[in-house]
Image (cartoon, rainbow, N blue to C red; front, side, top):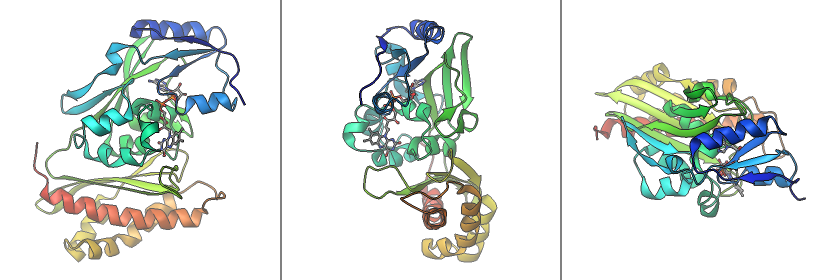
Length: 300
Ligand SMILES: Cc1cc2nc3c(=O)[nH]c(=O)nc-3n(C[C@H](O)[C@H](O)[C@H](O)COP(=O)(O)OP(=O)(O)OC[C@H]3O[C@@H](n4cnc5c(N)ncnc54)[C@H](O)[C@@H]3O)c2cc1C
């Protein structure tokens, strides 16, 4: 199939992006296009028929990426591959997740913020944003506002962004002393969307667990985050620092979490029961790994 006819505009100033979205909203509806890696297939299959596409890739302000106030700020026109290549390790969880997204060719066009705005429940970056407590910067006709990742994702392919608003950047916190991270997913082939995946952040001090957050993806309508601090501390108390023993001790707690977060019905790829087993296997392993790496991380 081919896309239905649409108008295409490519402003160079953020104010004009918003003005174009407002104009389009009054005349058949508009959509931001960034990398086009998700939107173009949607148009080609006629799952969406916006009258106007507003291309944001020529707005200088949106091309910026860098460290600001303890966060990596990634502008909305910044491609995934640029962050993967030029900012490797700045936000360790982001660096761990990026290579799992599609293939390099996809990441060379797709943007970090576009993946968040698209809000695919099986996508990696929304789970990373939830796990880290990232903040999205947004501009619209009423001015600018910030939305926490927790508030941003409201359902499958659905966010709390208004039709005339645009994400301008995302801010992800840099690692702090005593933090460790884990990330893993299972897909049928490398580059496919995940059947299930986890993103994990642990913070410890002198061996004591201060925070343990697990975000899951591919298993419900949006990324889910759960706090397993007490469970991880209990497992450490019983098993010590050996990762295999720790993972074994965590099994029941992560299985209980999987019961809670896996809400996707079965499909041709995996049953809910299989997805729960994946979350349990990946969650225990990555929690143990994140705890181990938290013991060695000093402040930057
Ligand atoms: C073959 C293939 C495999 C893929 N595999 C994966 C995968 O394994 N994991 C994964 O996560 N993704 C995967 N993707 C999707 C890819 O990561 C996309 O790049 C990403 O989801 C969307 O980013 P984009 O910049 O291309 O957004 P676009 O396609 O341009 O836009 C996507 C949606 O977000 C909106 N949008 C984009 N930017 C903004 C903004 N700044 N403000 C407001 N709204 C905005 C658009 O209006 C649109 O609704 C795959 C894509 C392809 C084609």
